[in-house]
Image (cartoon, rainbow, N blue to C red; front, top):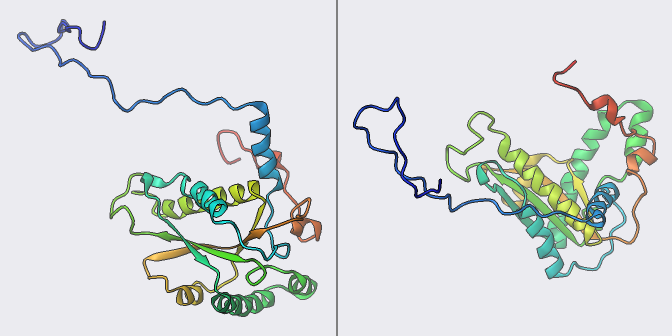
Length: 246
């Protein structure tokens, strides 16, 4: 039977009931799913495995605008709740503004150091945890929590889904940058109000990530914090649960 064939009412239909209207084909339909080659699949896994949180390895030369556009397009292709796309990307190159951001980091970092005890505090103070002045480009990724209106599909019961969506954009950006030979470092040691004042971010917009971005020639083979003995990668098998938390 085709979509245009007449449909005979079933035996349980009310006497005299009209046949249902023919169903038109859905104009919005998926096409064939692309199958990636073994080499393409391995490239993705290699990029994921070699991604690093970069602090001190940035080259000073600027990023080509076409390359930066590709990286931002990858970020903008991230999934988002209700197709909300709540992100914005503030590109920060001005040395004076970056100096202000660095001062805000330094103040918060001093507070953070005091939260650790004895030997751990000394080790913390020895770590370099940002590349704000080293990297030629800083990017502040924000989440506009009003975008899409008061009611957004998928956010009705979990309001924080817009923030999670923005984090997906950050991960896309990070992996695309790695593929382009660009390093990224995420700086999270700020008082949000201080950073918002420097960047003139309105109250309804939340800062999700402050990224230091630039070309790199060298990277650590493993996460730097693991190599420096701060913390080691957990065993994946210990993190996988079946059916329930038990």
